Length: 131
Length: 462
Image 1 (cartoon, rainbow over the protein chains, first blue to last red):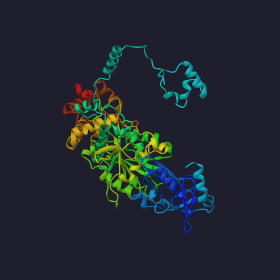
Image 2: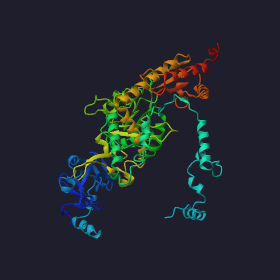
Image 3: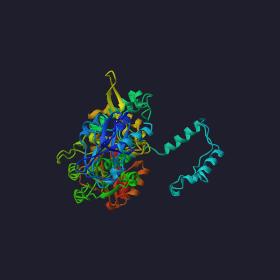
Image 4: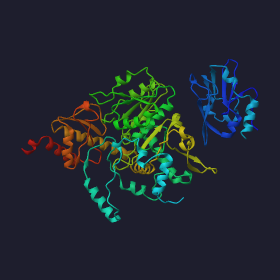
């Protein structure tokens, strides 16, 4: 059973969103996603300042056998990419909800975050998908 | 499945399903002028008859003395190159499926990559591309992916870059919203105009292409161009002749005046001069190398050296997640045809010659071209077009149109160069000539004598 922290919001494409105190949002991939992808060897994070739209592919995580897009759950401006992943991509596997975060966005609206799944919904979504 | 050709019924059925009347309908997109007309072929012929027919046809080509370069160069190919390349162990154009089962093939590609890195001064090379022109197109697509400081998809393409390469790049990359903008050349030197490049400062530009030596055979001011690009966060794409790199500064060392930035970002070119015959324009192979920083944006296969579970050295395909069998439509390239057999020949060629041998080829080619230019300019009515230093190619200006002169030379079995009238009309009667190490003093004398007779018949008769 994968780890689904209750204080985060989730997408059907297996990203999580953490509301930060300054109004920004932190984005990463879920424990389920990292476990399905296997050992991750590379992550490409968006440039700071880039404008992203909800549902837009804006990061890539790469395992030995696959490369997968990560979609931004929210619209807004990228305010940071996780530079630590360049030398330690394994953080994505080891701490998907912590040091393995991918990027931070200053959201252009609060509504999008509210529309994302809760931990309970995401857990149910995984169960329904037979994952 | 049975390997039986489709019957008329099969074909009619399939056409009906897709709603086409005839097979010809499927090619409607292609303008009629470009379509192959029906071939006038005789009924079946026996092997012996076909052999005889083709031998006769081949003889019609003659064995002309060739002074045309313009992107494909006639170099001596030592006999062992193709004797070894055509051995059963090597004689394939492809990296096999289950590539790691073919350690020998992978090792050869690894050695090739290492040699190309040595020649270009770059950190990583791929296992080859289709040809030089498409390698430039791929380099432009790669630059758009790699240069994240630029959003414009605009690429500066000097007019002194091989115009065929420009056409191919436009054809392949133009449909992906990539815009190519010309940069003019200096009429006196034959080099890309630095001022024309510098006037673009402050604009959002993705990459600058620099060909060294350029299409005219002239040596560009590569250090200045590279530094300018880097100062403005523009990627520098180098198009180089691999033989010239035995003498010239490798693109990995161009520039250096900008803090933390040294050398070209992407290097590509035509590999044909390395042991591949001219044939009728192919098959050739393209090469590409880059910095490790951009390796994930590079198209094509890459072979890496590794160790197995018992620590023994071995080779494997690496960074495959960029490739189309995994990444599908988002792959770094969907046309990364590997010209494996040509790469095999090039690797053997480079191994046989070594660094010193390749430098001798380059030096001899440079010298023969200088001799050729001197000999032709003594004839009268011919002068050199440009003042910049040259490698093994030069533009000559004639006092009359080049086409009839070239036709007269061809009747004497001499291919005298490439007429530039269509490509560079502003130059007047310009002719691009090339002499490699395969042209001896006697060949050059023969060309000069024939040209003198054609251009000054009265003097010859006197």
